[in-house]
Image (cartoon, rainbow over all chains, first blue to last red):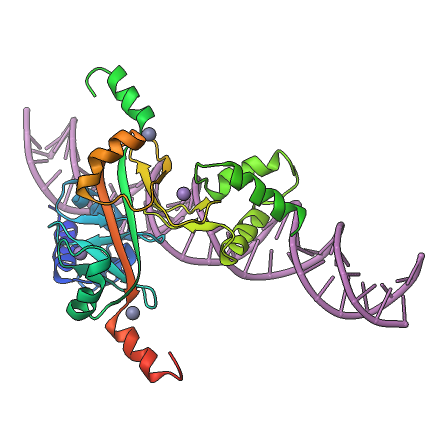
Length: 131
Length: 131
DNA sequence: TTAATAATAGTAATTGTTACTATTATTAAT
DNA sequence: ATTAATAATAGTAACAATTACTATTATTAA
Ligand SMILES: [Mn+2]
Ligand SMILES: [Mn+2]
Ligand SMILES: [Zn+2]
Ligand SMILES: [Zn+2]
């Protein structure tokens, strides 16, 4: 834990706004004015690989980061881009109404993406030493 | 409908692979060798704005395009990046097993993102002329 | 202290995408 | 046909997010 890494982690944990790397850079700069953007990216990558933070690969191009690693989903505003947490397993149609009450968000759309291993790749795994 | 636009649409509709703009460019080039990547991007944008194709903003950075606009979700291979269709409303935990049978995909993770309008933006809408 | 290791700052390179511009194609009016 | 107006193109430049590179600085282990 270098000073830079610690400050990045500290500042990220203060936020519930799921900032981009650039936003974190601007915040950390107040405490470490000479830190470089590369260091921010490198440490965010490091921390998320260690499972200390979460890297959110939401739709849209920019990566966002989350200081809280408990299992939860997210909701994004299609107007301003803001990303908020979603109470754990609040899901699907029947929840849209509850969500309005609980978070104030009017749900317009839901995106569900499954991640898995395709048949081809599963075959490859079988072929290898010990998938 | 220019020739370029038509060929882009034709080729996209031949595929079920949800190609990136670059992949479409490479394919269309075989029929129109002098087409430019800019034209491909411009027409994909145009076609998806018209609702003729779908632009998929899945997690991960690159945009993908879908010639089929009926409502369906997608599944991506975490190994090779391949994106496949998902039978319409197959959803969540109990489905993982069925998905394995139906698509051959071993589900590792699910990502659900809600899109909506945040409380702030909803307030703004109220303030404006006619939301 | 010196050598080995690791992380950094600063910058350059890469990548996906969009914007710009001069040229070419299409249409409508003469 | 000839012209003018419009739209789309090819090619290139600009852009923004991210990653890679490199010389320097900090840390640790002999
Ligand atoms: Mn969160
Ligand atoms: Mn599809
Ligand atoms: Zn908003
Ligand atoms: Zn695969």
